[in-house]
Amino acid sequence: MAFKIDRGRRKLASSLSEINVTPFVDVMLVLLVIFMVTAPMMKSGIDVNLPVAETSRQPAEEGLLLTITKDKYIHIEDKVINIYLLEGKLKEYFYGKEKKVVFLKADREIPYGYIIRVLDIIKKAGVEVVGLITLPAEREEK
Image (cartoon, rainbow, N blue to C red; front, side):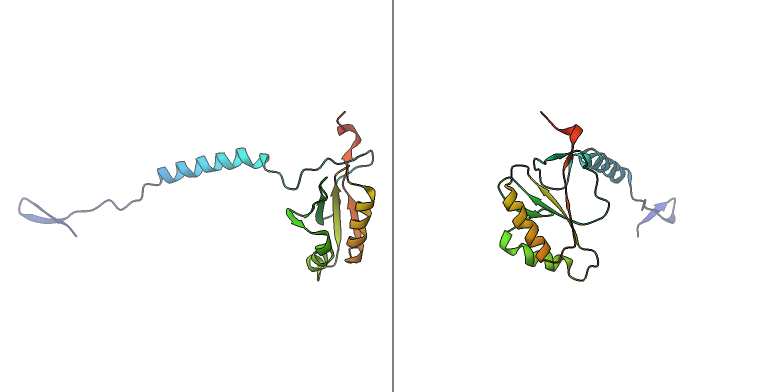
């Protein structure tokens, strides 16, 4: 405590104990603007050249996204997985879950035999529903 002497009397000097929040608010507003601008640019998943189908529609339910790139790399969500470990990873992922749904997103240049091999592994893992993701026909680039 600090004492001041004013004309022979002792007074207790009051100190300013308020926190200035203006710089904090400024920083938070700048961060908010940065996140608002960059959020639409971030997209989930792996880019693949999807085949086109006229009956394409959005998935009606939630499920696991499995992506196959043109180099035959298999991705579960965003993680690369070896084809020989795929069945075990799928069993582990769906352990104890009622609904077992996988959405397969494969590049159009993947050989049909490879896709059938992956579908066979998915079915062996106990997955009940497999949805194939395609592009709508009107979005096809020529």
